[in-house]
Image (cartoon, rainbow, N blue to C red; front, side, top):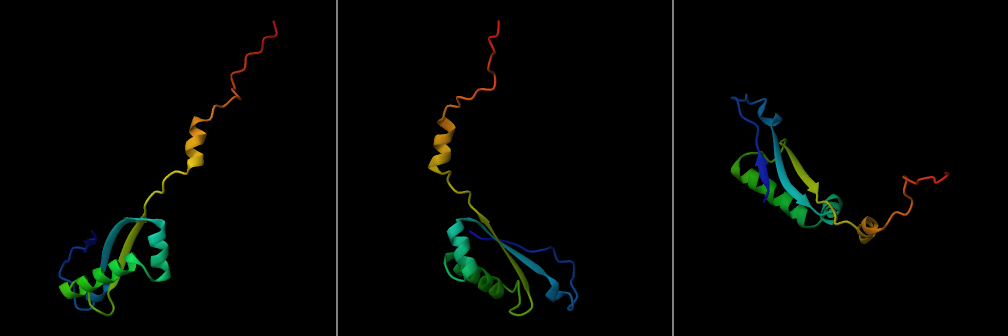
Length: 102
């Protein structure tokens, strides 16, 4: 479900090892899940913790000093019923009024 992107390594020196950035893409989620993540609880927080723990176990990141960027995008919400009904509403104010001033 989560996608991990690691930059290409070109023989990093020990001083540069801590400067690596690891990007974890969790995909699209609802506004509610993203709000809960910001507040510090919920399903997405568990996914973030699991992803970082998996990266630590694989040796991709160190426990201290590693930069991990978590990407989460908001799913587009369903259109409201009002906007659906507005599509079917007839517009009586036509701009192509013909003046019959013969």
